[in-house]
Length: 237
Image 1 (cartoon, rainbow, N blue to C red):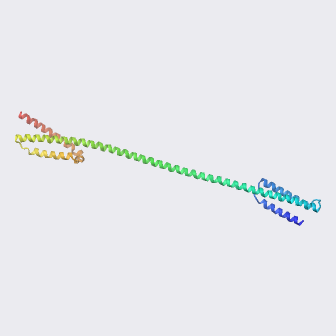
Image 2: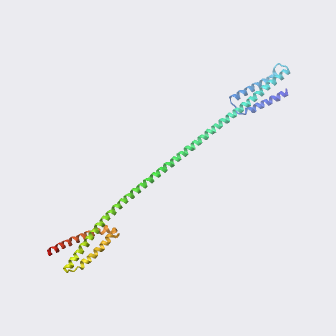
Image 3: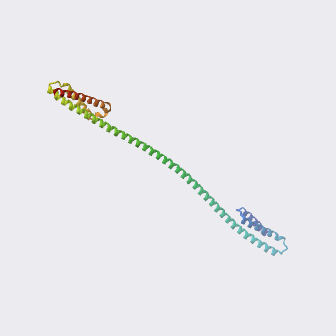
């Protein structure tokens, strides 16, 4: 009897230890069966049976308890595996969410950087276009100015050469009449100097300033000499 009592005590302890494991509906059902068999085993001593029959029945009930305990252990092990699997799935899902959030944040940052780069590139292109247009406008103005200066220079040079030609003719005529030609020679030298300046690069810088005066002066001088020449021819005729 004492041995049976000790065995029962051990079985109860084993049952309590097993109950400390994770419990689900199936495990709870097995534990209830174990408790019921343990109660049956405890009631054997009160039954009207012989000592051998009682010992045999206790042994049968103890074997049933052992079987149920093994079944409970297997179910608890299975329950732990399921819990671990669920934990792994949850952790995997949480990691996937974290990775997805990081990717979204990176994509958003990349989009912002790309937008800033496009805006910067657009502003740079606009600035370059503005500079190019300004340079083109300056080039056109410079070209127009150069053409205008070249035309003015050509007119001035042509006028001075015409004055020189007239002066040379007048000097020859005055010499033939025996008149003093010193003033006309001095004017001829001045015109030659003017022609040299007008024909060189010096004219470009001063054309706008005194080119018109040179042309007007030479034209007026030519007109005066033409009048004198006409009078001179009339007097000889």
